[in-house]
Length: 98
Image 1 (cartoon, one colour):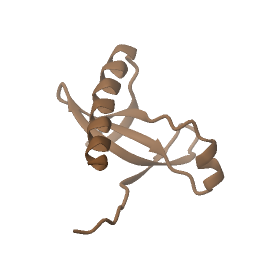
Image 2 (cartoon, one colour; image 1 turned 90 degrees about the horizontal axis):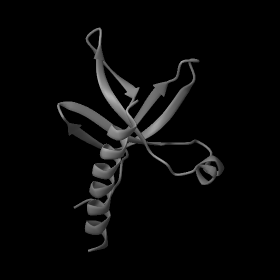
Image 3 (cartoon, one colour; image 1 turned 90 degrees about the vertical axis):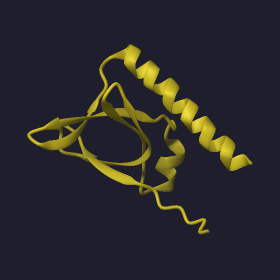
């Protein structure tokens, strides 16, 4: 068994055309919609240390036959999704400790 880790990376472009790199922490299908939990990835280790460590929850939407990611606008839905993602993160880290 190999212990190599290769992160799933994705590049998103904001409204100003700036590219931002993220690691896909997890995906979740909830009520027939796919969501991603993303954490920023930085080229400079100093930027990584300065980052808050917060992750983002993005909704996968289909537009003109292509998948795009959009911010989740509903605060109640974000809270529900965050609870689910965090339970899953806790399960993953508990397995790693065993």
